[in-house]
Image (cartoon, rainbow, N blue to C red; front, side, top):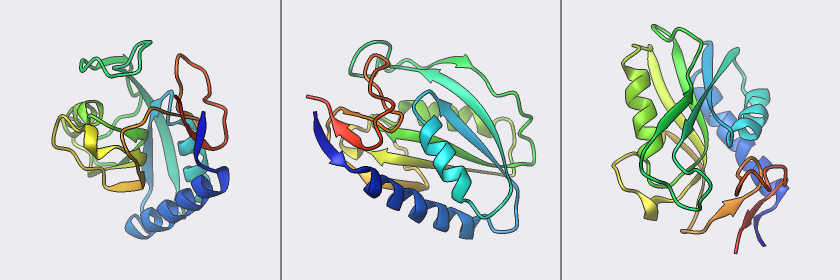
Length: 168
């Protein structure tokens, strides 16, 4: 493995994102929707740095299985428990590559009529996009590499690494 971003780099980006999101949502209560399992560490760190009240819920979407590339088919394995109508919602995800999963989730959540719906990702791989989708907030833009750490895994391993690493 080769280190792509040290823990300090990741935390610096989390703080930057939190400042920008806090300005944009000032004075409002926001529901953070974390996409399990990968986003749980990012959501925890980000939520503690936001300057407004938050509530949290989680959705689990599967499109990878045990491989290194997306199957292209999204399955919901855990849906939200929170009623979204009239709420400000921020989807929190670890990484976007093809865009299929996030676009699918945004479409599903918009149908529940939130007051606002935005998305934040720690990592963006725009070269892998298969659908048109741009997150509202992005931590790092990266090349087409398979990355692990800080919640990102390969076969459920490496999530606990504090930085982000390229898996060779």
